[in-house]
Amino acid sequence: MISLLSRKPKVPVAPNHDSPTESSVSPLAPDPAVAMPHQPAAQIPRQATSKPPGSSPKPSSQKASSAQAQIPPLPAPPIIALSHVSKTYANGAPALLDINLTLHKGDFLFITGPSGAGKSTLLKLLNGQEQPTAGTILINGQPIGHLQGNRLAMLRRRIGVVFQDYKLIPRRTVAENVAFVLHAQGYSRKEIDRRLPVTLKMVGLENKADRFPSQLSGGEQQRASIARAVVGTPPLLLADEPTGNLDSDNARQVINILRKLNSIGITVIVTTHNEQMVRSLTYPVVQIRNHRLYDVRYQ
Ligand SMILES: Nc1ncnc2c1ncn2[C@@H]1O[C@H](COP(=O)(O)OP(=O)(O)O)[C@@H](O)[C@H]1O
Ligand SMILES: [Mg+2]
Image (cartoon, rainbow, N blue to C red; front, side, top):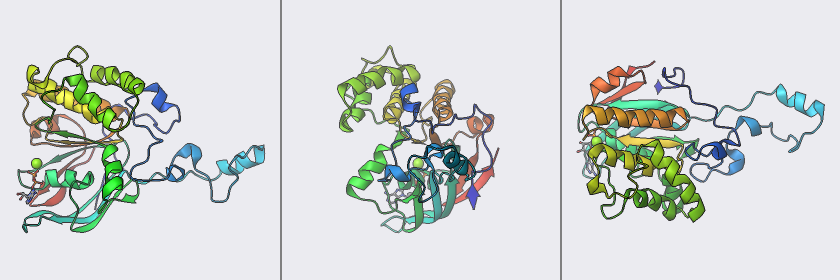
């Protein structure tokens, strides 16, 4: 079984995002108070709020707090846990076979592998765009294999997705493309105005907010699409061949933005063909070959 629990990449360590004040510090840091699919807030595993069953909700005495101190906090569940997951499309085409994969909050994972191996399918299973034909997928401890309707919509809101071909709306400006997501999710004008400039600055597009996609380079379009993916502060970001259409300089910029997002606590999965880039970094890498997942390297 592949697990990414034990080793961390040699990059700036993600800070503890369980602080209740975090979202007021950075609008881009994932909001720990927002659970992924329909997880009641009380069940969100957070060190600060973990208590033994039956304990007083407001322990005030010295005795109560020292008793608490002896009980270690519950560990957070993995953000992603796939167990014996297979996917065969309706036409009989096998896409994934017996995939086991565990990621924790703050992990960064590269997925490589030849075309047709199943990389995109794996990301589609993770954001509920496709359903597995066998096995279980847990996100934050919740099964997502067959979510529908509102529950699926809630899951998708908490996962940012970046595509090789950007998928920006051509007749909308960069700012409108990014703000559109927040409008759709019911954010207030005030909150949109707060998040937009921070997010555009993070991807280096603060001076191109009023451009249309056709007025941007490929690298800029991809950075706009990253801004759109993260403006809602998802805890998880899936990037499917985000550098596939870019030259090496732009590819590096895009990867560095993904690394920066990871350093503020966002869990990032990137599929790529770019072996050279993967080798130049020190993140965990898995490969999908013939629809099966192989551990290439752990740091
Ligand atoms: N919607 C679909 N319907 C039928 N077969 C599909 C569909 N999407 C992908 N496949 C097939 O599943 C396999 C894996 O595809 P994909 O996940 O796109 O691979 P990769 O992203 O690694 O190139 C391929 O054989 C592909 O033809
Ligand atoms: Mg693909």
